[in-house]
Length: 621
Ligand code: GCU
Image (cartoon, rainbow, N blue to C red):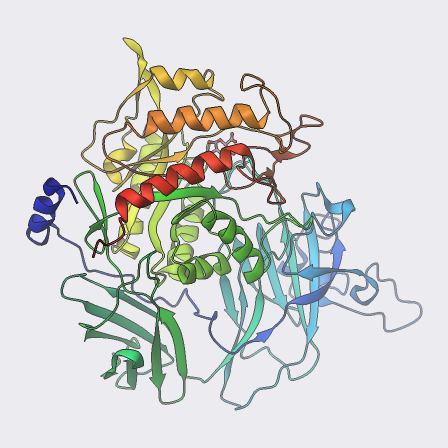
């Protein structure tokens, strides 16, 4: 390792101030992934309702604001009670769709559909103890969900990519529960994301649905993390819901023989510190996970956690105090190899991450929204670092307070769910947002909220470049947002939207920040199997040349700590309409959507192989 780095690292403990406030457990979160839960996945009856006839009366008043909603309100899940009764819907006779899953790829009729679809699930529920409590947990519904159980409104959730739940203890019956959800994937200018995106607007209950039954005092949420790689102090917090204060919780990491009992305060919160001297640190080279066990008088929750630190030091990015290069790739949450759309299972997630790993990647930029929890947990098991982002994308309505609140809710739901995942090292706030005073204010608030929620990870955002007015050969990344984040990331498309690939030979970069630099997007399209000379657009050879030129240019940037080229595999987008080439797919993948490797795949894979040798030289005997 170069002496200069060794010297700097020796200074590190003195200079590096790793803030140790951590993500405090919250009542907004319900840790359900590792609990024994009752799956409500499978076939749900559905009614496509473009005029929302089941939600509004003919005077366009919502039925659920009436004291006694009529049988014609779909959420009552009514049946006719006499041969003369008029009722213009019947869930029992309706079609069905698979949950989890987007509706667009389950029915040709719904491929482009944007509007409301009613989902209905009937289920029984067996409570062990009369005092047990029950919750219905949703991994994610795109985009707005109006949720009803046994005719009663549980609530409304907005935001297509983060988990939410409702307590149903007082509503749940042992037999014949009717869970009805109006899912509306309509786009709105004030939404997050806004009207205009470059991905398919997959609607539906796209992630797992679970019935979670717990004791009346239960472990709702926790946080755990390593404050310093050097002295290996692990701090953990636990939230005991239903506690009055004084209850005991035993926290243990059995493999390290660490056990501590602690008393919760009257908010049900308790904090503990472990001296984890013998802990093996988590890293891509060795993604070591430990069982973390939480046990209260009535409840027990076990999760697997990894211990690592992430920090910056000047232009360096440090994982466990070691310099790190992010050999990344951007990924949409779409596994369409079998014709479907959104990732539905751990298997789909593993497939995408295996494709990333075959590039010699140690990092994925999960664009442009929080991905399925399967993606993050599989990445952690595989030793792949993660950038996770909220869909504050392009031309958000910066002046609308509800839009801001929506973005903040999605941020806190993302952090709430994944704050204990060692693989997640970066929260990203925005993608290619146009600079303005309103946008700067919006993102400044969001950045401080992110740090308040979790100060153990790094912040970034995908910014844009411009050229110097006095010298078109100098590309500049300069944005007020760069002052707010820890890593200066930017997207650039030299060779695709910006000149031809040879232009990369002539461009130099000016990035005036003493922070690590990360290239969050570059790339170009190619249809797999279409070959020609490197100057013919859409050929694999054109894309191959574009990668060669861009990698050579970007590798010259001072302080470059990684890349996540756009994108792992072709993905559906309503903006990509060139017949015979795009056919509804954005073709910038280094793989086709079915996993065929294009020539650019090998350029990137070999570039990363060299980086790997440089940063992870085999330990000489
Ligand atoms: C943008 C944007 C991506 C988009 C890509 C493209 O940089 O961030 O979401 O898909 O360019 O145009 O392919």
